[in-house]
Image (cartoon, rainbow, N blue to C red):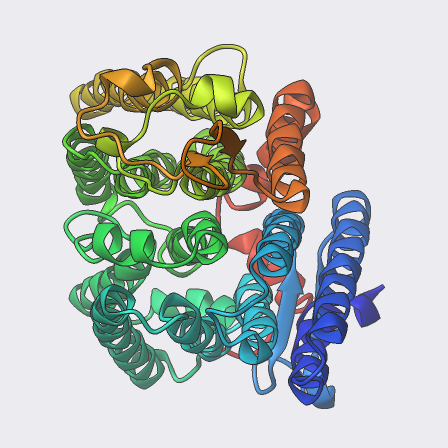
Length: 520
């Protein structure tokens, strides 16, 4: 079974090479990319079942034993993240294929799109199974280099400007991460995560705090926690709809995943937990207030993305198995639902010609299916029972109440308020875009309906702009997955609980990497 672990990285990497060689045959590129991601999804599901039933899998590449060689670790958390990320990457790929087939791929250099997309997937998968900090850094860099290309596809002025900000911020966070790795290596003499945890207690407490803060800042930028989230709302909305959906669903969650590893394995103490709780509170509040003030669908979703990162940080900052379990469940929920909403926003943009709320109206009659595809995940993200968003928030609030401190009670109240404001912003979008008559929109100028006539005096004919079925099918599939999270919330939360219990202390992770005692 351990032979399957490297495949989640090798398959997309080799697939990217094959797709690049097939640059002049876009049809073959599409088929190769779909097959590769479908294969990774199948392997990830097998790994999840195997890990949950038989325990974690550890692979020492090249025959070099830990801590000297590269170690790949797949535990319940890693396997769950692999399955969810592969699902989202495959669904978004199908969406982008439908968009490309409809548009003729005339506006984007598709010869590099599919290879770059697979490179992005390689970086994401590698980050989730990395057993040492440097390999985690390599995973981040792989996905970031690919994201630099994807975020500027099309070469418009707006995308280049937003991409420049994204690249600069990403480079700063990468440099800080690399500097943190160098300092940790200088302090403990290793970059292996399990061995770092073993040796960290041997260095002075003040040095531990410095290293801890540096690592959290680097991961915080990637996860877009406040006040390090300023770059996200201006960067994501300018990218093509499929790219935005992947970025929103996955890239920030890789940062959150890194925070979980740092807080549960490398620095399992409680020194910075109170500070993280404050950061979670501010991230939730500032993010949702930004969403309320926006008039563009993609910007609203970008700010709600920031806001809901706060829920995940809350679960991690509690420092308990219950909090970590709730955070894991909420991460899975949010990856699926946030990606689905961005795909639905892409459908709205294609159907209505804009994502500006002020320019859209009357779409319920013209596109009722799109209305449903946006409405369902909107209710889910807003935390309406019995959806998975409600279950995840309730679990976080219960874990917070178990601590019973004034700050955790404030966070419970803030989380409930943020949930209501999220629901308000998304329902406002749905009401104005779908329910409001087009005649009520000032200076209505939508491509939704075009009046055509053959000659003066002829009777005008009305043509409704259509959306490719493949794009709608991919979005509908993601909505179905989001509903499955609710239907199977019991087994999923049980799995998240088992994953959270494994992360209650560093001993479990250390034991799977070093089954026997080693010389510290």
